[in-house]
Amino acid sequence: MRHSKRMRSPGVWLDEYSWEEKMECRKRRKRDSHSSERENKSRTHRHLKTYEGQYLESRSLNHRVNSWEGHNLDMACEEESREGTCKDRDQDWHHYSKSSGRSGRSGRSRRSSRRHRDRRRRPSHSRHRSSSCFGSNFNSLFSVDEIVCTLGEGAFGKVVECIDHNNDGARVALKIIKNIDRYREAAMSEVEVLEKLKSLDSERRYACVQILDWFDYHGHICIAFELLGLSTYDFLKENNFQPFPIEQIRHMAYQIIRAVQFLHKNKLTHTDLKPENILFIDADYDMEYNPEMKRDERTLKNPDVKIVDFGNATYDHEHHTSVVSTRHYRAPEVILDLGWDHSCDVWSVGCILIEYYLGSTLFQTHDSKEHLAMMERVLGPIPTNLLQKTKKRRYIHRSTLDWDVHSSSGRYVRKHCKPLRHYMVSKDKNHQQLFDLMEKMLAYDPTKRISLEQAMQHPFFSCYHKNSSSSNSRSNSSSSSSSKKD
Image (cartoon, rainbow, N blue to C red; front, top):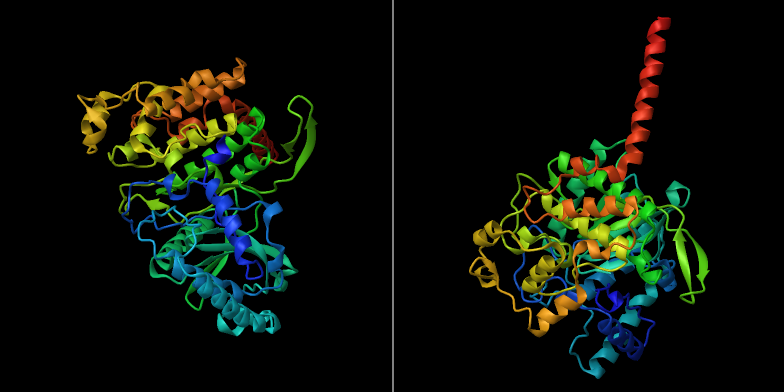
């Protein structure tokens, strides 16, 4: 099952929890994750542009930690500093990896450190909430006065929900970055991109998350965003990985493609598109019992989405690191080290759409060669010209992929993958159009892969073309009638 394969964020360890409870929870999470295995098991180097863990991962509202209510920013930053000292010891993290393992301290030292943490925590409850954040310290017009709960957590830091009492109690999402140079640099890069996108899209026509403000709090870069709902992955997970209806896939796909095309038009490549980085604006749903499956199933009310996490976004003129994207959504030219451009985002979007259609990831693997073998099983042979140009010679034998179909890995690929069209559950025109679009997005050769501008004109989105043409005709008729009056 999918849920046994995918990495989730480490939880928020509260000081009130006993050590045994923490360990049991960590063991349970460890069984359900493949942690940094998913993001490149064999790689130990780091890249300055991609930055470890720099993404915003939403967390289920059902699993939010209510014990955080009333805690201020001092508490959050202090905890980030403590956690960072342990997590940053691991020098082999890739920029998406996270750790849920425990340190090797003795039980005695753990007990003493817990008592020490308890002593440090007590005074924090009596602090004035308003003094913990903005005000005279930051010269900022934006003010966050209270942290409600933790929304998500990664190697970069954490994301918390806050109340802005200076704005009629509005709720915002605050991304708190660890006070570590490489994370600070990544955060400032993200702020620059977000502010540029905000200036280019002042009318909010595109589905990109909006920055509200940012500030530096004792070395912790904090970025305030509009508060959104669950990620599309989390909704799938909480709905037992039931696929989205095709009409909702169409709606989400059009918004995602239009938003990413807006980035490409402005010479930006997102480089980390995946269901975790696409959030619903409102994740409300209707619940209905399925008697055949004997379970409750959720139907989303509003499929509007927004793209988040621009920490790895790269301008065309900037240095392009050799490895980008999370494993399951990584384009073949990235794996083969052939260089990449905007088209790597197109591949990622294609993988996302098939995941929405199936409810599970298309390429479930941790190994690059196995990943390429899965691609060949689903999409056919990789073109010879791409294999001849690759620098990864260990993947190639006589201009073909060096893969043994009779090995255990070969049998695994054959069992879990099949030609793309075989995944189609209906011969209906809508399903055929969707698969035609995905085939064009998953073309091996980046030069032959469909652009997002072309994708928006695909027949799968014909209903949007009719709407736009009718609105244009109405505007033209109104302008012509006004000119006649003149």
